[in-house]
Length: 303
Image (cartoon, rainbow, N blue to C red; front, side):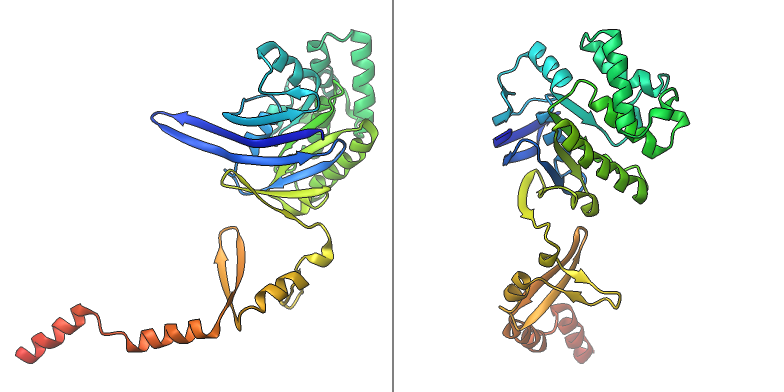
């Protein structure tokens, strides 16, 4: 097992209050896999990636990536782990690239920090920029590139020191749909070429569907693993009708009626027994008038 999280908890203290970002995270990830973690903003996705990347330390639990027990690494060892074994890909270009450096020099920077010779740095940077389809743009600065191109340079930067693990935090959040799909497809290609393990946090289900596994994270806790098989997913027609998977239909058959509830995160379908609705109607019909109305009626009679 390449990644192992056991009862990982992360809490932050703000003034006199303690905020719990992660609540007992348990999950494992095989080497060479692509896993997407989906959830709304504030769910704890970035907190989990920061822990796995050695940017932060857990409050409690067990956290292992490859041969590294991240709870036991000291400051210098953590720095080396971040530099040599993990690649980071962020949503915003300011966190990925330095505006005053060309694409080529942005890619060579992590290698310079790792002590790699100038000849090897330049050779590796050119190879990576060619791999992401930007060999002709290597001497351009970020402002001279489109958003999709900037993110491709950022991928090359993340892979500069040949990491085993790539952590991508909303990597397509600032891109249009076409550019986003191109970035995700590129990540899939590079996974095979460079033997990468990729963990991606996103709120976009279309992007997440390209992963091998999809995990849900909400309020700091992992939920169910989502199915990638399209036959097991609901299908919405152009007329607005929904064809549900068999598992959902069998569950909804437990009730004679279906309740539909609109929530911020989506639409909830819930089976309801007919007698529940009948009892609600009876209660409404038999309910006494409000006391305020009763007092008003008595006052009119006394007048």
